[in-house]
Length: 337
Image (cartoon, rainbow, N blue to C red; front, side, top):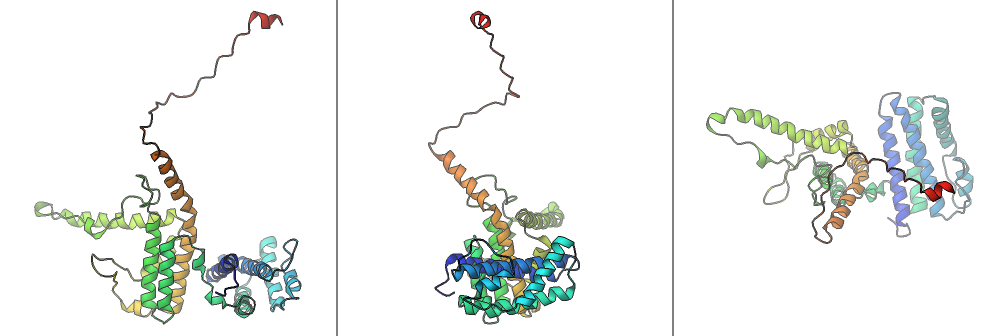
């Protein structure tokens, strides 16, 4: 990132790229669900134009109409793609106000327009390539952000198998982050019990041995259910999680040495598109899960308050509904008055 970019501008550009990627994912859905891509594309461009105005220090009293940005920015930079962007705006208005679904051709045309627009304009105004804007800057989970950045170093040299392993570890770190290990409380809202591991497998001998298979299956169900509940409670899309687990390698930790994974043929054949989809899924999941950040902070704050002083807390019994107070009788003097 260029040194001249403020943290706020970097974050806004990352949000623009997130909206754009959202639109791309939505454009791949069946009709009419793919129509939502037009709104995401429009939101991405509108946020981008506002970021340009902020970065170039263009004085505006209020946000102008969508197409008016081209005239507003012209004294400092000649923005391209005005006519295609007007068509995007028209399609968005038709969808939002008239219920007219855009055609597949309109959505694909809008995607190509935005790709060319962002790729062309970003280096000239912000001094960076649009693809270099990292949405990881939006994340609030340190370990997840670190693993995503480490995975990117492998993707940059074309080792998508190793990069995918990093993404798998990042998703595991995300679910662990909200398991409540650091709250110091017995009730952990996103944990759904202590994390199961291979050492928790049931071990039965002798006459009890035939039951081992049943217990093993129940353990598998519990482990899969625990992950599903952790993910869905954080707002993570489960079908996407299932796809992620199928195509990404499973990385296991060991008592000694670094984490390892078995590189199947499908892992060695992973492509840049596979990696981009999976990385976007982890980032989107982390952004959705960040809504829970305040809950962990609340638990930690309550623990600190309750720990202060070290005195035993009083115990109170429930008394049922409070009876209304009897009205006071007026005195003789008050009656006479």
